[in-house]
Image 1 (cartoon, rainbow, N blue to C red):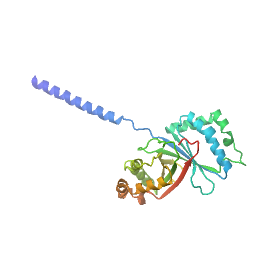
Image 2: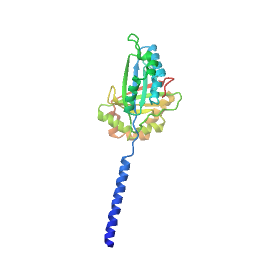
Image 3: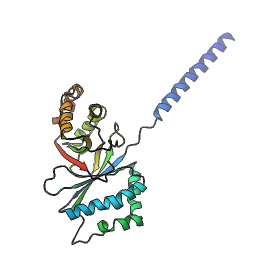
Image 4: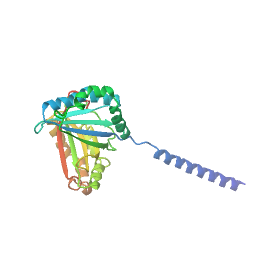
Length: 265
């Protein structure tokens, strides 16, 4: 009887341990990862000051208020720090999810107030268009920076950087370098005050990724990039053969921007 009771107790204990382990694994699997934001980056090509004013007035008076009503918290509107010719207008719109992006697009179509306040832009005649063209890209946030981080509200310069890759696999590897490789952490530690990182899902010059960092002024810009290049952790990860720039990056585009006085970023 004693032996039978001992075997029974052992079986019950083993079953309990197994069940507990299974529950622990299930609980770990069910831990929700932070939802990744989506970003729409619009670049307006303009031919004159009148077009610039029309586009900026549209965002100031109509688009930003409407987007805020629909749950978009921060809309960034920027012009080039040193334009070649007439400036372009850059607009950054964050969405909580791809469904949010879809809902906002539909709701704008049915928003009478938005249409009325944005009429001059939305209904500009062919002879006097509001812009030459819009280039628009849809980006998905990186896992190690799943949501936009708005920098302190004071005068500053923004740098928008795009890294193009020769292949999809190289592009994914560069994203891995920013995430698991620890490159995003270096930017944050050094004080770049990054705003977002995003993989371009739809847009031109794919495969590419785009990110935005900020500086107090051009002196800080030079100082921070110098510190980045000499950072021991950066030297460590960039020396890994599979993370070499020559392997992962085929072209870098960099644009220095300043926010409009009504920009929410």
